Every structure is written in structure tokens, then in C-alpha cells.
Length: 121
Image 1 (cartoon, rainbow, N blue to C red):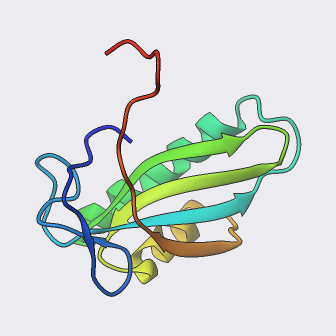
Image 2 (cartoon, rainbow, N blue to C red):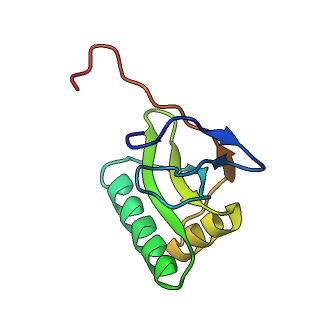
Image 3 (cartoon, rainbow, N blue to C red):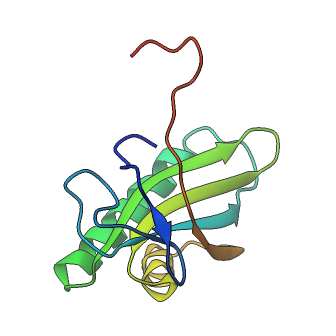
């Protein structure tokens, strides 16, 4: 997860830091949304990401501070993990409901950044 700063500490639910992303707002926590994605993944990930991005932007325009970061499809498992920054799980739930996407659960998370061995920088 590019752009995450070091020196995180967990406080309550989620990731609490001075800034969760370089230049990001203070006090946002990291959340993972787990969902089931049935059928062939071609195009589904892009469509789902577009809906989440749009829903997060609409909520931000309404003054709700929530950011959709990315989605990760687990190949061969029909599972998808979507990452968000928000002040609460309730705000992440609002994004998913506005996007019309079902999910299994929303979980507070902590992240660590690192390099993949052999990757070019």
C-alpha cells in the first residue's frame, strides 16, 4: 500500500496516526471490506471500483470524510478485499450501501509497508 507512513499506533478501532497517507487527513482509520464476488472477474473489479469511488466522492461532497483506496481480488477464491480510510466503520458501510454493493463484513485494519524482494523501485 503505497503512501502509508510509518509510526502507526492502534487506538480504538482501526489505524490511528497523525496522517494515514502522505498529506492525508488526521484521525482517519484503515478499514477492510470483505465481499464475495461470484462469476468471472473480467471487468467486475473495475466496475465495482468505479461504483465505490463514485459513492465515496458523493459522501465527501456531503461532508463525510471517507476515502476508497483500492480493491484486491483473491484469484481462485471469489473473494474481494476493499480498502478504505474513514473515521468509523459506519462511514465505510455508507459508501458500500450507496454503491449498492453487498459485503460480508467490515473490519478495522492495521497496515505495514515494505518492498517486494526483487521489485524495481
